Image (cartoon, rainbow, N blue to C red):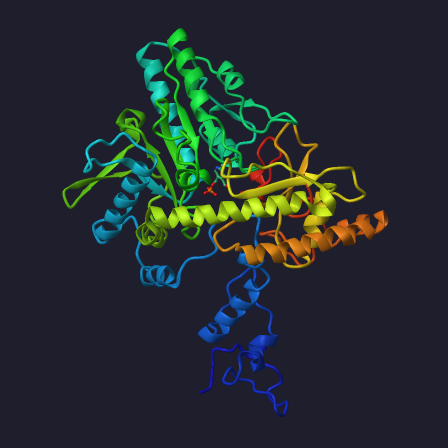
Amino acid sequence: MSLSTVPSEHRLNEHEPGHDQHVSTTVYGSALAVADIPRFEMAEDEMPARVAARFVHDELLMDGTPALNLASFVTTYMEEEAEKLMVENLSKNFIDVEEYPACGEIETRCVNMIARLFNAPLNDPNAEALGVSTIGSSEAIILSVLAAKRRWQNARKAAGKPWDKPNLVMNAAVQVCWEKAARYLEVEERYWYCTPDRYIIDPKEAVDLVDENTIMVCAILGSTYTGEYEDVKTLNDLLAAKNEKEGLDVHIHVDAASGGFVAPFVNPQLEWDFRVPLVCSINVSGHKYGLAYAGVGWALWREKKFLPEEILFTVNYLGSPQVSFTLNFSKSAVQVIGQYYQLLRLGKSGYRAIMTNLTKTADFLADAVAGVQGGQKFVIMSKKGGDGLPLVAWRLKNKEHYDEFAIARHLRSRGWIVPAYTMAPHTESLKLLRVVVREDFSRHRCETFLRDLNEAVKFLDQTPPEVIEHLKQAVQPRARHAHNPGKSSKSTGKHGHGHHGRHEKHSLQGKHGKTHGIC
Ligand SMILES: Cc1ncc(COP(=O)(O)O)c(C=O)c1O
């Protein structure tokens, strides 16, 4: 078959003997394999599906290997049955509830199951919980801040008081999406700052920051930096006392992006959810320890009064009300389907087994890291035994001629993606490394990682400082939007992967210089 779609200028010398000018043999024997690939402007001509697919496939090989990406909380493994289901439903737009009522029903089931897992006050077994699926925790957090702001404004207006200076009390170690929410929704960010010895919010100092303009207080169930859980119960008790004393009505939102699917199974007696009276809303990422692939989160509210009517869109289908309260309309249905599969497939005992294994693996890793070079090398900054997320955060014990970033770079040469980053605002002098233990990080993989970590440390110990300095300048992975091959991609700190990200111009940096690398 002659492929007339190959533009003539892209054909090799048609008279060259032995060279196949058509795309009829192999992709790499075709003229297209030696032509430039469109980067800025769509080509005039088509290309065969086989060739296009191969080119895109090859381009994507430049990405890291998801299973070796120890930087991210986001799921990198699902069973084949789940993947098959997701592929079968790829063409469904989730928002078309009339056409795809089963998808809406599945979302409602997930909301109900997760709300009950978080002890929402639903005494009637058939009572509908209040919540919605989102793209992730960031969207859920933006919605929760919006709801709290509107509720506060409505109350202030009704009382004839000023309503133009809302604030949000939180730990400066919040994930950068909180800064985004505050900035987009014009709410003052009122921070409690970490100290060199404390990375989770001090409940008393946080409550001292609360005033009549506070729309809510954020508590983090699983700090992105060290995985530690903030003390929601104590925060509740101190806030309740202040509310009563000063006639305030301030509530707590729990950012359980990562901890929401861990704590109920590993640490069920920990009271952090709707059991705590002032908790008005919770977000959780289905795509983190909810074990679904990227693109699903959940926002849940205790009761209707926390979701002002004017921001709710109610769609009626099959006789039951479907509350739409999201930032976008069209989205893929497959992530919610993947989440439902996991809830159905694993049940509580399945999640418990996985989360317990992850906690054991994280404890094993923490002990091994702490024991490197007879315990002289590293300090562990995360918690063990299920008192925090299954992750290990650590830093160098002593000043060395290399830092945590050099270790991360060396591990990268073995394929491991381990982030090194500076601690939250006011504690930036602390640098740390973090390994997130996900479902597919088995004990065996963990041991392979430890072997490479020990080798990296040994290598760096023996490497002269000038060489370490030189290696710092080595070419780093290219930034997401760096298309221009003419521009240098040397590590100037501009690309987020290279250095501390403090000079990065990326808008997600937030006003405190956090980078998007930590999520
Ligand atoms: C505590 C916390 N909140 C929010 C987020 C943002 O979550 P998502 O990536 O699901 O939007 C993260 C991401 O790591 C997080 O750790």
